Image 1 (cartoon, rainbow, N blue to C red):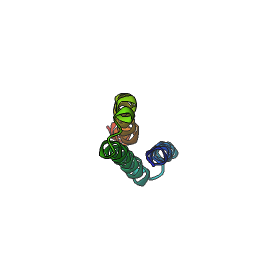
Image 2: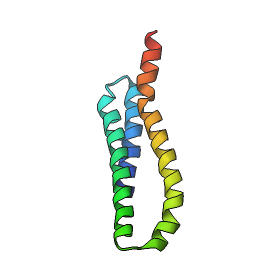
Image 3: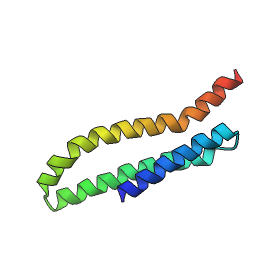
Length: 94
C-alpha cells in the first residue's frame, strides 16, 4: 500500500510543478502531494507495526534501517518540491 501511496504522491507533486509552470492554480495539487506523502509514511508505519505484532524481527532488521533513511530523504524532497511554487511565487512578487 505504501508504494501505491508513494507513487500517487510523486505524481501529485509533478502535477503541482506542472500547474505552477503553466500559470494555473496549483494549490490543490500541492495539498494532495503533501497529503499523500503523509499517508505514505503512515502506511509504512503500519507495515512496521504488523511486523512487530507478529515478531518478525528479521524483516525489521533487514528493512527498517534502509527505509528510515529513504523515507527521511523522500519526505524532505517532497516537502521542498511541493512548496517550491509558493516560494517562487512570493519571490516573483518582490
